Length: 160
Figure 1 (cartoon, rainbow, N blue to C red):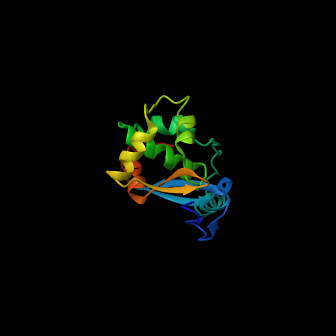
Figure 2 (cartoon, one colour):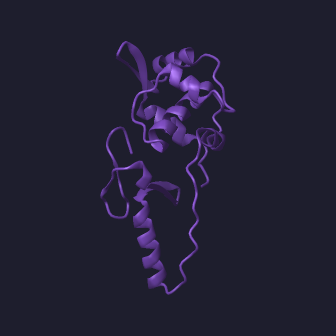
Figure 3 (tube, one colour):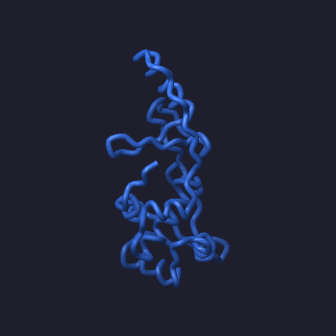
């Protein structure tokens, strides 16, 4: 799901409305989105066409924020910040803007720490344009920009 609009399934081309239906497929270095049921149907069809036994399904759980950070291995405070925002938007389906308090609470039990979130956010906005700032109910909120998404995608691939 990308910023308020649902992703399209790479198999059936219909929108993926619910985060529970979303599956990420990696092939040839590219990542695709698909409905879980579409992947099951595709696997069954391939097994039938090639006359091979159906594989035993592997059930995996979604990555936690800490696992995501450990897999991506961000080196700077700004990369950590971008990873937290990306994780919230892509893996949790949470399209809302982030606040300093929310980011601090997310990193509370993480192996990765940022000593001054507000200062790092300020630098990420003014110097690199990785976030945009907005105000709602007298609260300052931040949203990851396309440049911020690009930084996270340039970090190491996650091996699922």
